[in-house]
Length: 79
Image (cartoon, rainbow, N blue to C red; front, side, top):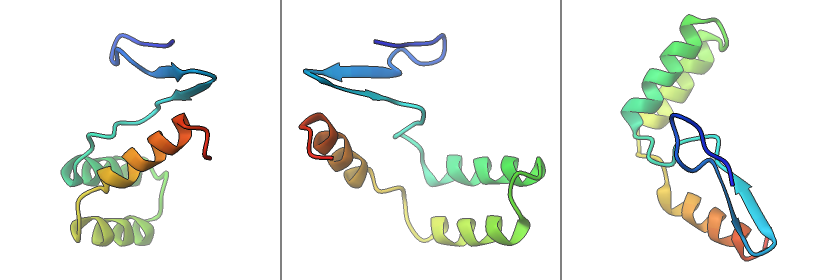
């Protein structure tokens, strides 16, 4: 339903349900740490908050299973 030059699929539909994707479920901890650094460098977030985020991220990888459950629940109309 929607795409861009960078992402082939940005929105999809299943039956009467549709979901737009404005993120990257393949994010790794390394990618997220670099994103936090960019936000900090541009003064979009405070240094104390950036440090808190980094500390939480370094303890684990993003929970892809939770994201999968969110998508399935959405597509089945359970949200």
